[in-house]
Image (cartoon, rainbow, N blue to C red; front, side, top):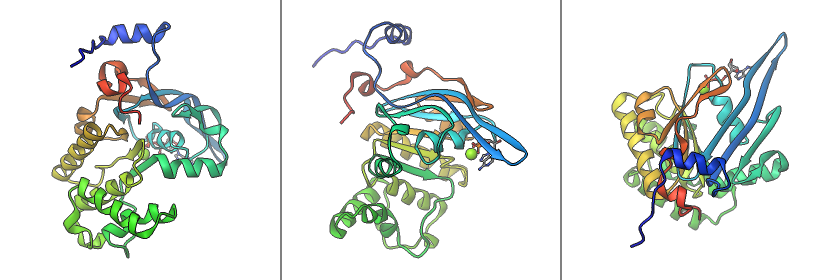
Length: 265
Ligand code: ADP
Ligand code: MG
């Protein structure tokens, strides 16, 4: 077995600052500004924000209500446009893509989990999960097979034919997570995924995200108010007034596979 020397946090930062191997970043925001023009006042929701996300990390983004967390997530995932700066996803500038390319990229490489499940009420669990694949014109049989696999990952195969109304809040959120995973994304963006759940269900969802991160090397960026989600993450990024005020320790926290470039397939 190879013995891999794991650099200390300080060594990593030094090598990143010098000519050493660059960390494998899956997403990066560089001096990003997002201004909402609302008639009389402009809201500077992101104000020169920098943030780097390493591949394979589980990152929690925390900060007071209104500090720009949702805006950050929407801008970094390309759901929303920015006014200044640059967003790089897997090294590619979102600004350099056409709308069509951005949408395709999102469908292929990204998953989303929101506070309020956004499930279609008239579709069963498995139909909700396979929907993104059908929209992406995958054959129906293949879509169903992959949707069932995703439901198995979140432990919900036995609820596949239930409607969202027939599921608990925690189960609904697990369907949403299965839907986010079904296209085998490189990164999953989650906005307050436990925000609507009681603490027991919230813990279950947090454990599930943690397990998916560890077992599948999935990168997660989780916006949350919930410190117990933050504690499970590799690091906590703190925001205030549209900026990152504390990045946490990215290199100390990044799992080894991300440093060594393994989970980069
Ligand atoms: P958070 O998710 O941290 O609570 P948001 O990103 O939702 O914060 O909002 C950041 C700031 O931008 C807040 O002051 C909010 O009121 C404002 N904001 C968010 N969305 C809009 C919008 N569509 N139009 C105008 N202002 C907005
Ligand atoms: Mg928000």
